[in-house]
Amino acid sequence: MDTPAVELTDIVKEFGAFTAVHRMSLSIPEGSFVTLLGPSGCGKTTTLRMVAGLLDPTDGEIRIKGSRVNEVPIHKRNLGLVFQNYALFPHKTVYDNVAFGLKYRDVSKSEIATKVEAALELVQLPHLGDRYPRQLSGGQQQRIALARAIVIEPDVLLLDEPLSALDANLREDMRVELKRIQHRLGVTTIFVTHDQSEALAMSDFIVVMSAGVVEQVGAPEAVYNTPASEFVARFLGASNIFPARTTEVNGEDAVVDVEPFGNLHVPIDRARGARAGAGGKLVVRAEHLTLRATDAPTDSGSIRIDGRVETVDYQGQAVRYFVRVGERQLQAINMIDGRPFAEGSEVALHLRPRECALLPGDAA
Amino acid sequence: MSGWAWIRLHVIFVYLFMFLPVAVVVLLSFNESQFGSFPMTGFSLRWFVELWNNDAIIRAFQVSFLLGALTALISTALGVLAALALVRYDFPGKQFMSTILIAPILVPEVVLAVALLLFLQFLSLPKSFPLLLLGHVIFTMPFVVLVVQARLVGITRNVEEASLSLGASPVQTFFAVTLPLLAPAIFAGGLFAFTISFDDITGTLFWKPGGIETVPTQIFAMLRNSISPEINALGTVMIVLTVGLPLLGAALARRIASRRGG
Image (cartoon, rainbow over all chains, first blue to last red; front, side, top):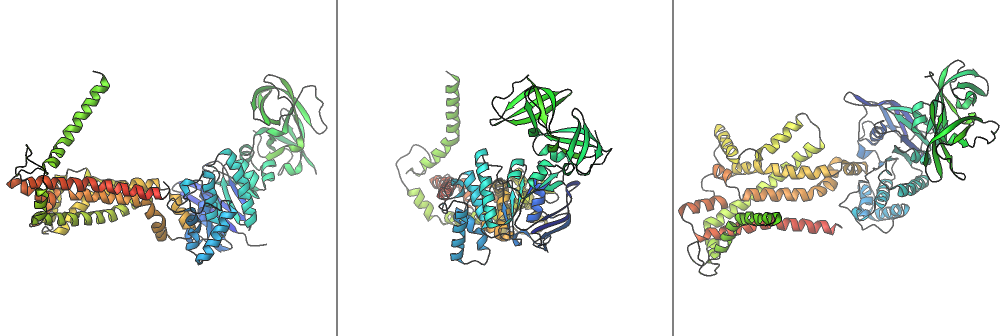
C-alpha cells in the first residue's frame, strides 16, 4: 500500500488539566478528502492545528508523506491553510497575497506571475489581481485565500471551517467549487466542520469526533446509514433511538425486539456486533419513517404503527413531523407528496426494518 | 429657556474657558507693542524675528527636538516589543508586567521625577542628557504600549499563521505581515511620545543637567525675569508644533490608508 499522506499515531493533546484529544490515530490516504466532523469543543480544530504545526501534540507522532514532522516548524511543513475568517493580508493586493508563499520558495519572478495567474484562474477570479482584500466580498475573499494556499502546491490542504462565515446560498456554491478544485488538483485535504451536510456532500471519508475521541471513521453513506454509536446517530441527521433487545441472530438478520414495533428483522450488516440475548439500541432515521393515511395498505417488507401528528415543521420540499405514538414522540421527515398532514391528524407510520440500524450495547 | 439651549450655552462657556487664554497668547504674539498685553498697537512679526535671533531659544529648540525624537524612537521600539509580548505570548506574571508598564502614567509626575532623581543619587550618577532621555522614555512608553496593544488585539493571529504556513519564518512573518499592519499604531504611538516629551516640564525640571534647557524650561526661565512678548511668539510656535504635528500625521496616515483601497 502507498504511504499515507498524513498519519496520526496515538496523538494526545492536553491543555493543562483538560485533555482535548485522547489517543487519536488516523491514516489519511494520498489525494483523499477527509472531514473532521463534530460539535464545537470536540477536538477537531485542535487536531487540524497539530497537523499544521500550530500546536504541539502532548504525545504521539504525526507523519506527513512518511516522515515524522513533530519537530518541524510550521513554515517548513509545506501546507496550505485556509481559515474561517479568510485571514488575507489586508495590506497586500490580491496578487501579492497569492504570490506570498512563492516568494519564500525558489521560484523566479516570471514563474510566480504564471502560477499566480493560474491559481486565480482556478478559483475563477482572474481579473482581481490589483484589488485589495477589503474591496472583495466574503466569497471572493475565501476564493483568494484558497488560491493563496494551493499556489504553493502543498503536500496537504488544511481547511478550518472555510465555509462557515458565508451566506447559506454562497456556502452551497462554494462547497461544489471547493470539491471541484480539490478533484482537479488531487491534493490531500483535511476539512474541519461542524456542519453535517458539508461533511456528507464533500468527503471521501468522515471522521466523527466527540469530546476528543474518534467516534467513527467511514464513507459518508456508511457513517450516515450505519452509525457506530448513539452520538453519531444523533449528530448526523435526525434519528429516533429505541432501546432494543436482540432475541436471535442468524446468517442474514438479527431479530430485535423493540417497543412499540415488536420483532424486527435487521440485516446483519446493519447490526454489527449483535449477539442473541444482548441489549442495544435501534436507530431509525427520521426520513425512514413514512406517514400514510390510516387506510393506506402496508407494503411487503414494511411494518406500521399508528400515531397522531403533534407538530408540523414545514421546510419547503420536505416536512418534519413530530408524531405521538403511545408514550413517545417520534420524528419523521418526509418529502412532500401532495398536501402535508395537518396537526392533530391520525396517521399510520410505515417503516422498513432493513433501513434500521442496531447499535450494540446495554438496553436502557 | 429650554434644556438644550442651556446645554449649548454651557458648552460654549466651557470651550471659551479652555481656549480663550490660548487664543489671547496667539493674538498677542502678533502685537507690535513691547508689552505683552492689551491693548494691541499693531500687527507685527517682530517677536518671531527676535525669537529666531535668540540663541538660547534656538538651542532649547534643538535640545527639545533631539530629546523628543530620541524619546519617540526608543519608546516606540521598546513599546512595540512590550506590546507584542503582552498580546502574543503567555508568561508568568503577565498581568503584573502589564500593570507595571502602564504605571508611570498613573503615578503623579512629580513623584516619578523625585523618585528617579533619588534613585540616580543612590547610584551616585550625575544628571546628564541620557538620563533625562531615560526619564522621558519611562513616562512616554505607556502610551505607545497602549496604542500598539489595542491595534495588535485587532490583528487576528490567523493572518500571521497563514504567513507561517506559506513558508515565511517567524521573523519574516513579523516584517512582512505584523509590522506593516501595526504601522499606523506605531506611528501614532511615536507621535504621542514626541509631543508628550516636547512639552513636558515637570520631569524635565528635575532631571535636566545644568546648562541644558528644553523649550518649556526655557520659557519657564524667561518668565521668571520678565513677561516678554517673545514668550507669546514662542507659545504660538509651540501650539503650532504640538497641535499641527499630530494632525498632519493623522492626515498622512489616512492618505496612506485610502490609497490601499480604504
